[in-house]
Image (cartoon, rainbow, N blue to C red; front, side, top):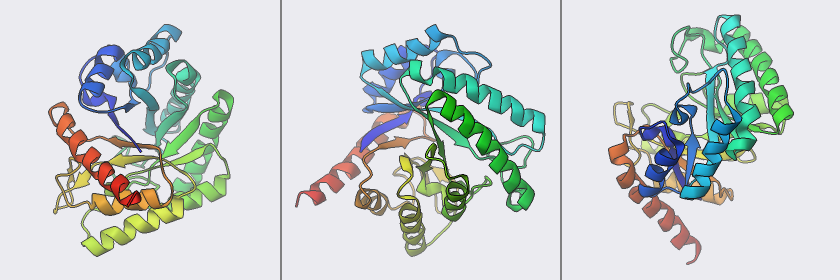
Length: 281
């Protein structure tokens, strides 16, 4: 597996400076965000020169751009807001080749009108599912047009709040463009070690044919998010299950400060080395 980090962990609007910081902290790849180029995360326009500067910075620093963040609220209660998100997704997708990546990460959304990462009781309604299918069909049309893949993430606060729902969406849409970004810390808030392991195993087994990227953060005992390696997540179990399905993609950490990046790199590399040493015994 390749170890990476959200590029926006590091401050700056010059992609070369940001990716140099990524490399210096011990990461070989990054999930890019257009804020690192001085633009909104989902811009109304991306110049060819701006996109190519990202690829140039990646080549110069040796940091691979494995994905770019394209999150917007796909089931926002206001249809016009959803339409703006679709249009901006098209802008981003059109420039992916120039940036040197073929994966855009999405947010399946929530009925909350303010915060796309906030849970809402209407997320589990048939109407929310219908709107998600419609939004995903639009996104897949964009992905087909620009030859990119789309990564969705099971997340408790969003309409796709479980591995089972993610599998249902994959099966109903039946598009090879739809991929999975798996973050085990998004599968539970508070769970016993036994239950946590069962959730992670079940999710990985159920979605194994579509997992294209793995995320790495953690949970505190009270359910709050934490930096990878500082909470209750069983990383040995998580990485061993990924290895068991033959996953050799990117492990991307996020939800941490720039000052923590080097120590998290050390922690995750030690866990990856542990898995590799087991494989050769």
